[in-house]
Image (cartoon, rainbow, N blue to C red; front, side):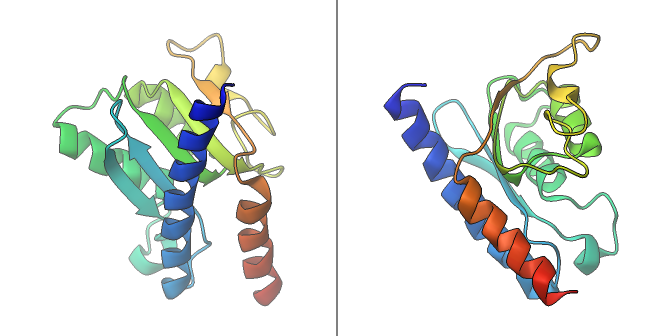
Length: 155
């Protein structure tokens, strides 16, 4: 990837990391996400709110995708990018496919529940009607450290 693209992805990951920090305020797992439009405008942001909202679907990606769809007043986000601190799970990867997001940038791999190449690869599943470009490992160490420190405190 050319340098300009990686710099942009790094900047978006910084925004996602800021969102992840907000999850800590409600003792939620620190995962953050942003949906960015084609011109670089942030259209949606989210952090895990499962504990705060008592909602198993309140993942960072789901919240950011919903906000972006509302901002654009359309469900099809076919010109957007999702940046998230952790590899999306099956539910969130499904939402990416259904919303037609063409690109996902993520930080840390999720070896237990990841659906962008770890456990499953829903984002590039050829039997589905939409395939996604995946850029993994953006600020991986910083994203992973935030999660490891959170879980170390909760064990």
